Every structure is written in structure tokens, then in C-alpha cells.
Image 1 (cartoon, one colour):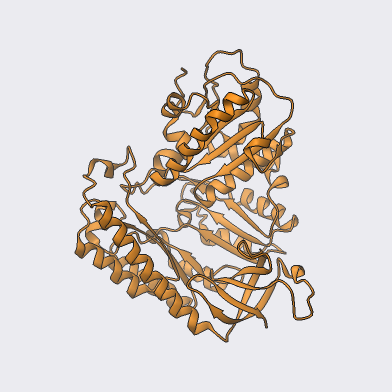
Image 2 (image 1 turned 120 degrees about the vertical axis):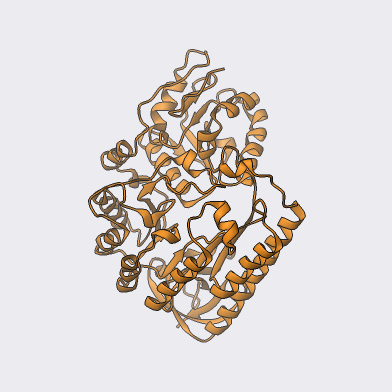
Amino acid sequence: MAEPLQAGVSIASETPATSERTVYLETFGCQMNSADSDVVLARLAEHGWRQVASVGAASLVLYNTCSVRDHAEARVRGRLGELKREKRERPGLTIGIMGCMAQREKAALIANYPHIDLVVGTDQFVHMPQLIDRLRGADGEAHVVETAFADWEDLAGVDQQQRWTNTRSSGVNAYVPVMRGCNYNCTYCVVPMTRGKEKSRRPEHIEDEVRRLVDQGRVQITLLGQTVDAYGKTLGDGTDLASLLRRVHAIDGLKRLRFVTSHPKDISDSLLDTMAELPKVAKHLHVPAQSGSDRMLRLMGRRYTRDDYLRFVDRARQRMPQVEFLSDFIVGFPREGEDDFRATASLMDAVRFDGSYVFTYSVRPGTPASHLDDDVPLAVKKARCNELLALQLTHQQEKYARLHGSVVEVLVEGPSKSDDAMLHGRSLGNLNIVFPRSGADGATRDRLIGSLVGIRIARSTSLTLFGDVA
């Protein structure tokens, strides 16, 4: 068995050549992974590959993986187990793993799942067509494919030359990575290990990519980074997220501009002032608090206090009274006591977030927190998770009820995923709003997709607002 390189690309077995180039790609995890998957599909399409909707129709199966939580990795392991029989019945099937789990567990994946053909780390995915071609020309021996393509600037250069955006999935939205990696080293997080240190793309590369996307009909762009508000630090020329927002905001045809995910320490007054000033920029901040307990925040290595977080909320609301906040929380972190948990619940009460993701802590091998005893019982973790989720839903229901009868401007994104008879869109913040796909006369409203429309809110559930065109 080959020893995978730290640079990230290993081939584990021979795959007989197959004439039809069809690919099935499944993405796990965050929006950054979704953007990476778009790039891979675009690059493969340039080399004659066609995307299909099922494993059975594919000659190449790719999983773009996430390592942030054990649950995401468990799902990938389940998929790989299911593919053993498929590989036996179709020896010509090529199976590849890419992304954070591939970066973190190269050797283990190859050892435990010998039917995998290709393991690609977080920097080499742009060269997937060349790697597949080299794999299909393999001599039958397990071996390592060496590459020198592990640098974000090289990746950004290919961005300009290969025009990745030509074959991205259709729709009004597009994700554009503006930086990779993270320098914060929170004690529970694998991102610094799987994505490396912060490195920002040049603003002119980002602007060029957004212009091409808008030319193709995208009207809502989301700028991505693990800590996106730290954008520009590695460029050394004074560029920051505020200046990037101004640059992209000026592009004709763009209707909404978003960015995720932010860290409380890097949200400057300049960034908040820019958000408040620019009308296309969503008044929405995804800023994970993770805990309301100073003791837990220290153990997590978050580098701010509860009061720091509350001051950030106040600064944002002073400039944008309508701003919406989304947070992440971890419950059951090592040594979390009842008082620590109550401090988190009280922070939720104090801020009244517009949305929250709540996760039970799971040990991530190799992180500093992995050396702490995972001493909170699973039953306690689940109870705390359910309590925070219920509290969050209560806050949302109360806010949504106050919106009944009001008119909210919505960017219409397309048909509702749960009801094909409805269209859905998002507010200038991040509220999910649904309305009938047909008018009173029965005529379709699909022409509204990609447009800004006023919707009068009539009713709501704990997760969704319902209304009709005002």
C-alpha cells in the first residue's frame, strides 16, 4: 500500500479504463466545500466529463468530505462501505475521496477502504482531471502521484486561465471563496490542520470571477472564508473585507452580496459601517459564539469573552437596527458544567439570534481539545442541545409573529425544495420566505426568479415565513 504524501494525492489501486466519462459527486459540509465541488465539476467538464445523478450511472464517484464533526465523517464511511459491492460488480468504477477528511486521514482511508482509487487533499482538487487521467493509465501497481500544486496562488492563477465559472450549477446564487485556512487554532477545530493557515486571494481575481458569474445570470454572490472577516491580512497592502465589499458591490447586475463565516475579533467598525452603507450587502452576520461562558471560551481558545461578543452585537445594531444574527453553539465541551451551560442559554436570551446551529461536542483527533477528557455524558449533551434548539425556535417564532402583515423585500431564488407549488427567497437579512408559484389568475410567477419582490407576510412556522406578492 502506498504511503500518501503530505502534499495530498495518493493512488491506491488499479482502475481499468472505461470509455464513458460520467461523474457522480456528493458534497458534505460547508459552503466552501460546495464551491470546491463546483470547481471540480467545471474542470472535469472541460475534459469531457458529464455529471450524473446516481452512483449507478457513474464511471467516477467522488465524495467531497468534511471533518469538522464526527457525524460528517461517519456518513462518508457509510457511503464507502456501500460502494464495496458496487466496486466488485464494476471493477472499472473509479472511487475518489477529496476534501478535509481526505487531507486528515489519507493513510487510514486507503488502509481501511482498499476499493478507493484516489485520495485528493484540499489543495489539489483543481487538478482532478489530470489526476484521473494518470490514474486510468496506471500500470496496475499501487503508487503515489506526486504534484507540486499545493499553493493557493497557483490555484488562483488557474482560476483566471481556466474560467471555472463556465460550468457551475445553474441558479441565481454563487459561492466565491476569497480566502482559505484559519489562524485562530480553536482547540476543538480541525480546519487549521485540513485547510492550513490563512491565505487571501487577490481582490482583482475575485472581482473578475464575480463579473463572469453575474454575466452568466447570477445575481446573489456569497463570499466565503473560514474567518472571512480576516480577509486581506496576508496580502499586506491594506486590502480588507470592507474594501473588497465596495469593489464587488459596484458590479452592475449584482443584486445581493453576502459573506460567511465571521469571527468576533475581526469585525471592525469599518466593516460594519460598510455593511450599513452599501444597499446590496445583506444585513446578516454569521458569527459563531460557541458558548456564553467565559471559562468555556478560554478552553475553546476563542480569544474573546462573553462581554466582547455582546459589545460586538451592540456595535452592529447601532449601525444596522435590522441586522440579523446567526450563531453556532457547541454543548458538552469538556468540563462544561451546568453553570456554563446556563451562561450559554442566557447569551441566547440576551442576543435573540435569528438562527442558531447547535452541535454536541465530538472529539476531533489531533486537536488540542482531544487531550481533554470528554467528560460530559452523551445524554446530558443531547438534553442541552435540545434545550438550546427549543429556545432558538421560541425566539424565531416570536420575531416571525411580529412580521405578520408587513411587506418584506425578497430576492426570489427559485422553487421551494419542499413544495414545488411554491417559490422561495431570502430577505435582505436571511429570512426564508415562501409564496405561491402561481398568481390568482393561475399564471406562473417563475419570471420573478432572480428579482427583488415585495412579499406581504401572512403566517409563519418556527422556520419559515409565508406570504404573497404585495
